[in-house]
Amino acid sequence: MDTVSRSTKNAARAKKHLFAAQATYYEDAITLVSGEGTHVRDADGNDYLDAFGGIATNTLGYGNTEVAQAIAEQASKLMHVSTLYLTDEQLDFAETVARIAPDGMSKSFVSNSGSEANETAALIARTAKNSADFMALEHAYHGRTVYTVAMAGLSNWRNFGPDMPHVAFVPNPYCYRCPLQLSYPSCEMACAKSAKRVIETQTNGAPAAMIAETISGVAGMIAPPPEYFSVLRETLKPFGTLLIADEVQTGWGRLGDGMFGMVSTYGVVPDIITSAKGLGSGMPIGITITRPELADAFKGPHINTFGGNPLSTRAARVTIEMIEKKHLIANAKRQGEALLAGLRDLQKQYAIMGDVRGRGLMIGVELVKDPITKAHAPEAANRILEEMRKRGVLLGKGGRFGNVLRIQPPLIFSEDDVRVFLAAFSESLRVL
Ligand SMILES: Cc1ncc(COP(=O)(O)O)c(C=O)c1O
Image 1 (tube, protein in one colour):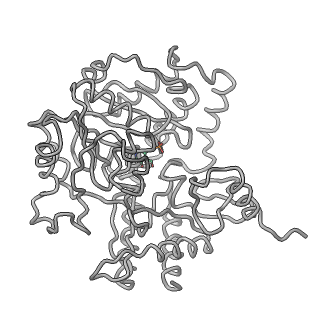
Image 2 (image 1 turned 90 degrees about the vertical axis):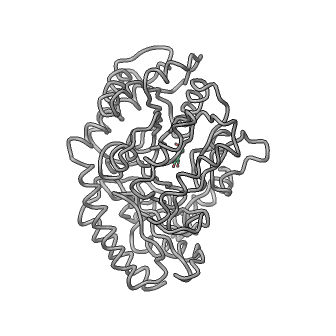
Image 3 (image 1 turned 30 degrees about the horizontal axis):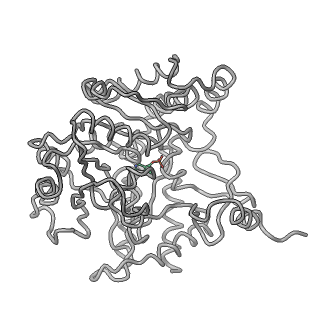
């Protein structure tokens, strides 16, 4: 009898034919074959509760019938035309986005990924402002194209080489490890205000835009204080610098207050919103949304072969409809609060849980070797991932030093799922 698992066999196949740079989780990478709801199955028949959702992407969970049916129907009718032609699917989708976007943000350009959405935003901003200077946050992650790699404020993701486009960096509102050695709230948002110093010392004095994730996800769910974005917006205003909200992870209800985190959770309407991930429930799609005067200041030419294709835009429209119909934003808030409460209870017992943070279903647990020195504990993060796997639960990992656990499940995560997750997490901490 063959005793080698399918997952182990596939790890060997991957080693032979996939790029070594394609990082996979776990000592023995998992091969996934099917899923239903919040659960996913591997090639060896193991079942997992998925608290990472394909990196915060499977909004409606696995095997959602409405999305699957819409895609199947669309695939047999019209699958691809390119942006050179119009389709009702793309226009219906653009109208839906305009309905839910903040007032005045009525135009969008559809691409295939978050990286492309951010590239498009940068093109628009640089053209509209006639300025080549650009700003981002330390600890930021915006994608894997050259310009978005240049926007990365995480040195491990800045792996292109020395000749990247220039981007000026503003300190991140990372209160647990304040880059300015201050404390909230007596800091009076000094990190946001320091954007002025960065503009004056590192740019042409009128940068086109500053891009910011609403919550820095890859960096480990760094969630700014409530007033952060309004102070940042005011700081950028005198310089005419646009604010781009990267809502790739935080969009479509994940933060539990509304469709877009910066708007609903932080009360700030940016100039441009970019998103991807959860929008298509797994179908590749990216979007750049803005006001007509900014969108149309970019004269192009611009094209995207697969952008706005009927399959992705149809899946995205169904996803938005289902988020609304099933009240998934309220669910994200409810289950997120239950998760945070459960994790904070555990934090009282386990000093290794240095910080528990996040909003809605976007939660991070930063692991430290010692709560006083806050020394990063990446080995513990790896061990928790493995222990959770043994207990049938998947979750993610992030942070500049790989010591932050990431919990970003599908928005259909239930009360039962929260209970199962917390029980497995508690046991994993105990055996650590
Ligand atoms: C905040 C943020 N922006 C942009 C991207 C890039 O998206 P994609 O991988 O779809 O290109 C990511 C991906 O993780 C992200 O987290």
